[in-house]
Length: 62
Image 1 (cartoon, one colour):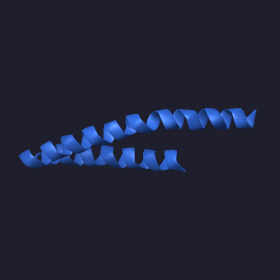
Image 2: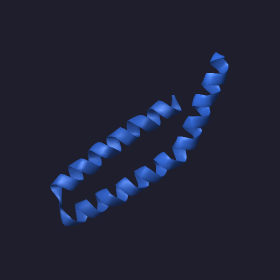
Image 3: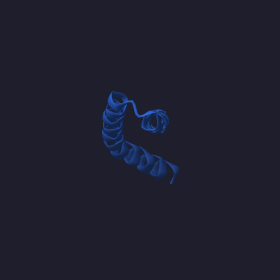
């Protein structure tokens, strides 16, 4: 039973990884735009979101 649950978690993680990469790409593009217009509030917001996404990527790889 534990193996079935572990396999399911791995499958979910493998499905989440490509979506996560797209989210990171989008957030990086948003950060770039914010940097161009020097929007400090948006820059901080993007950095926070990118940090959360980074932590999730690390967790999925573990």
